Length: 68
Image (tube, rainbow, N blue to C red; front, side, top):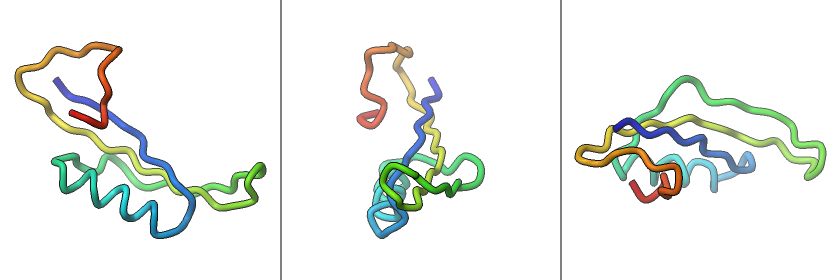
């Protein structure tokens, strides 16, 4: 089963730490990062899609993807 997540965070070190943690848990980058202004917080936001192949499991919409 292949799983997909979109990681987002403000444009600060928390975003880099979130992506680094995912990479160290076996996730792979998928596509280019994104960068946009959030008018509610008045901050720039970063986003990065990540994917991971999980063997021996079937997809369930109730599963917590970050724990795969």
